[in-house]
Length: 278
Image (tube, rainbow, N blue to C red; front, side, top):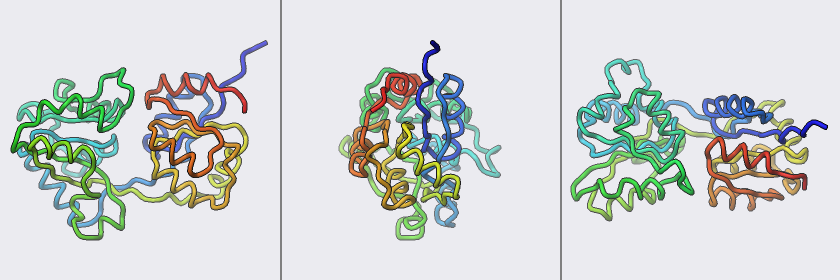
């Protein structure tokens, strides 16, 4: 009797990332479908665009550029003037590129940044996040060094005071400052709630009870899911989360089964293949 196929995976990452994850999962024999729960687009506010252009023009100002995600890499390097921004310049000016996980690291490599210029958690790290990254890079920061955190923002935050910085300081910024460094922010993309069409809403409602595995890599995505399908009963739904904080958000929403795994393809596939019906 042939072995049963793994359960269907619902990939909730932004569209660009979700498409790659669906392709990779299907190649590994896991049925998968994309249901992006975060909409991503370039930062459109004039203040954000001006700050980005200034950052591109003065890369040598910073000891390191920390990219929060692959989308941060994409929107930092991609523009009409991208030809004038040579990623290999980071190595020439000895500015490091920091990545919190393998997806962001690969995005940097795809953008043309030399592997020798990139710092990221070890491939076998228990987590891929700012805490794991800091263990790798903290020795680099000297008093007076400046670090630029390249990140996203929301349309509401982008229109408010301090728009050029996106969302405020985070844990990593506090560690850098405690080490004597200075932190700057530049927001290169905007995040928002997606507008799910009828087919996507039907998929979400079906996947709440049909045994599908929701791959959740963002607490923000969970909030968007809650708003998109109000009143949905999630007790029969199964979440596979890539961080303890995300797992807690899934439990708060009401997911009946919540598991955690590292956000690496091999770990996700292994976790899906090991699941049993509940």
